[in-house]
Length: 277
Ligand SMILES: [Zn+2]
Image (cartoon, rainbow, N blue to C red; front, side, top):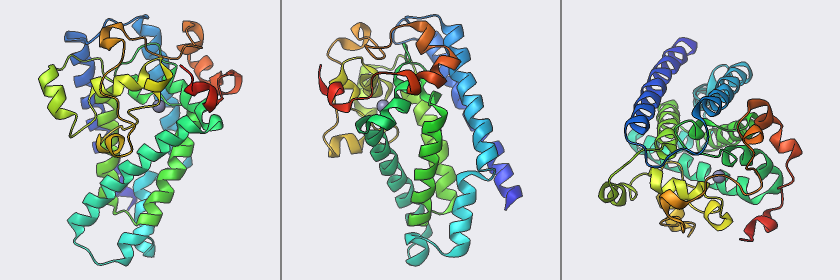
């Protein structure tokens, strides 16, 4: 099992590097909006956080979520290990249901003040590009890990579905945060199938009602189903301000040590206060 997981991890890493490189090159050649702050320190901090999070994940769960799925399978735990269904259907439903779990988790991170403290590190980025899609506080990653593990065990998600979902989520997060120019006609069709950069950018607006919309990372259907969908930002994609109104200082928003400290020093924890705008 360990060898299989090692090779899966290598494939995941190759896909991650490839998608990152394509998005980074695309946003360099055809950017959607000019960036407001200098790229080097932002990228250094955002990518520094990615490395830190991954080292931590390796230490805590060396076999990752795929390992959890193998254990659930071997023990016969969860819904899909209890019912007889075609394998492809189990994989398909697992990927869709895991995406719903991630949508609900994202909404919860906005609603619960204690969780918002950690999630605001993602929203404090003063620009939005491919690296924003990877910028999550270590504690948020840990909480998310627990939620995903619980969902995998309860549903009895097959290991193949876990790998598929993790690769998809990782790739779409980099795609929908990227600062790429995508023809509007293509965006209009594509956003029925997958969350596009123009759709997700609304979620990074400094207007709170826009921040509290378009929670999807992968499938765009949950936002439409649960009425959290917002078509376009009120100030337009070029005129909108990215980030949070209370954190406009580059030193705080874009230095790794500040990002890690932000949840513990931020005053913005009140979900009710955040509804005003
Ligand atoms: Zn969010």
